[in-house]
Length: 157
Image (cartoon, rainbow, N blue to C red):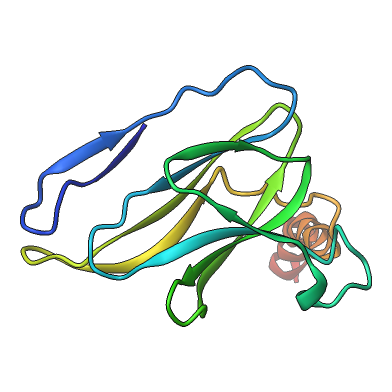
């Protein structure tokens, strides 16, 4: 269930929802909740993680049609919000698609005539889980583990 601004003239809200099928492959619901005159498309693109050694121009990129649900192969992807006229990338998020999981990709924002305006942007939900085995995570965990010992030594001096 997603709540968004109903139009550019008021602060009233509308709702969008989707019920996912029970599938083994990851599913992505694509929603366009942007209100305004700007035009953009969403694209799903392979990452270098999936395709070692390929240049960005060689990576697969496919259009994600708004108000649609697609099944994808498990893997790591970039979701791009691209201006339809200039083809410039306005936003990029990472999608880590896991088997049997469901995701929402949302174009959001409002060019309000009343109330606050928000530029068009991209949301991917849920966010990818942090890699618990990364070097940065291990370093942070080690620092927090040593913090009480360091404080005990300093206070004992």
